[in-house]
Image (tube, rainbow over all chains, first blue to last red; front, side, top):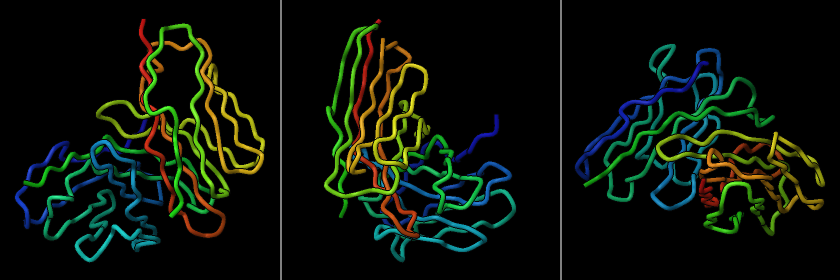
Length: 116
Length: 112
């Protein structure tokens, strides 16, 4: 069964460093998402992406964040200058159809980011 | 900010017991989803409910969306150890925005 994959599974970085989290969505899906989940807290929406541009973003997704689909398979989340409070599990998700219908999203296993 | 309150926060039961977990809000939602998340994994969608009063069944799981579309419940009959996990509800308001709000979840442990 197709699945969303994410790399790395864990990343430790120093405050102020740039990190790139990678995701490979399911191949025929059109919508891509990033979420984060700080330990012990709720899942929070960051951004949705369709047709090579951002569809929606939350207040969390400020200028320090960017997303890119550099080729036909990868979907990346970059944090330019990490802060301690960026430590969280980051989930990528993809869905096959238009988000307006709130189609089923398939989540990846997540990347646990720890900022020291 | 819309808030989804899930209760109970933790639930520990024996195999074979029945349980109900709740997802409540003061806001009206156009649709609501329930997910299960296991440790080290991403959430997995269980169901989407869109109509007030709607009831959906998935094997031993019964999902209900409140008449006013402000709340939802998940009932599990004869719980099994494989039901162990974090149950999350997520909802979105009417309109074009996709942005969902998640609850903090109910952590369920089913002991054999």
